[in-house]
Amino acid sequence: QSALTQPRSVSGSPGQSVTISCTGTSSDVGGYNYVSWYQQHPGKAPKLMIYDVSKRPSGVPDRFSGSKSGNTASLTISGLQAEDEADYYCCSYAGSHTFGVFGGGTKLTVL
Amino acid sequence: QVQLVQSGAEVKKPGASVKVSCKASGYTFTSYYMHWVRQAPGQGLEWMGIFNPSGGYTSYAQKFQGRLTMTRDTSTSTVSMELSSLRSEDTAVYYCARDYPPSTTVFDYWGQGTLVTVSS
Image (cartoon, rainbow over all chains, first blue to last red; front, side):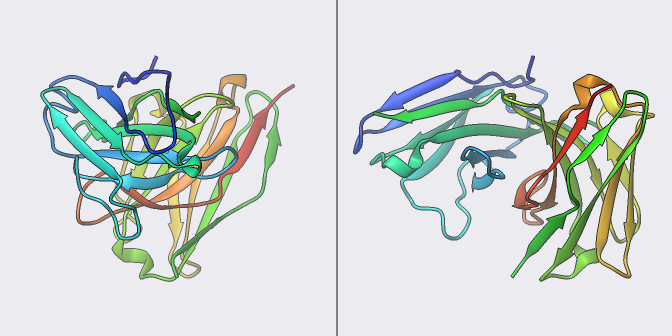
């Protein structure tokens, strides 16, 4: 059982928007603004998409955005493209002993 | 460009130990913390621990306490992760991932992954 809760799957058609939620507790997601999101294609290493809740690293399209409310963080992908089909994982800082806790991952299907 | 190149796949018997290395290039090795993350087949990501290549500071996830050791060789810009007392549940792809300094526990570059199979 993962520390953070994500939906197992979401789907959307090209051009649409989807939102993936990531629910934790006040000890992780709710306690720090250190939520990050990773995209993972099959057989590949994860790729950083969002950090510090809503910041995008250089090179990540602005179609990807992040937010947080209370103990739940969200990743929104707008203008869905076929190449967005992948697994997405959230991660939160959880203190100086636990450091990182991940969600169980969400499979995004572009219909 | 930043690269993290990991050692090759391993097959180990239960009870044995495995050491996975991660050679860094393209940046100042001692200036960035390194994390280890693993992924069991068909499963999600799991944070294992963090390591400071400069001073040797480590912090391990509680479930790996006593079994996990992280080390570095500054002469070759390599960090290594050794996991002992292996069991079948340790079968996974192990990744090294560089920490992103503007934040904390954010992984900006990843190694290609090393498959460790534990089987009798």
